[in-house]
Image (cartoon, rainbow, N blue to C red; front, side):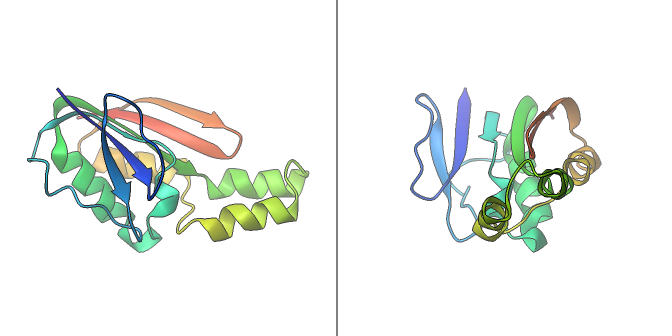
Amino acid sequence: MTKIHIVPQGSESIEGYQKIEVINGSIDLNSLAMNECDFILASDILDEVPVSNIQTFVQLLESRTRRGGKICIGGTDIRLLSRAIISGEINSAEANEVIFRGRSCLDMSSIRSLLQSLGLKVSSTNYQGYRYEIEATR
């Protein structure tokens, strides 16, 4: 059973998972065969990928996931972040840090639609503040 944890460069991974780092907005999954992974944990990783590469990134994850395997993916939702700023939940300094630390800030519905367009079945969605996580099955 192959389980991978995709993390930002220099971050720790969960024990029992193969660690794959996002470096300069991209990942190298050449060490994994097509349809090899039972579970891909990529929560909070979409912020590390340039918005222009999100579709390619998600397609790459999908290609490495076996039938019945799961992908857990997430990032910052720009709509929820905007609401948090307007409502005063977070101050402008924290908002700037979130925006300028990442490379993208797509909303959950866009990522959900992308996953579904690739034939994945979304099994759960979760929000925590302005961050989201989606679990989908191939």
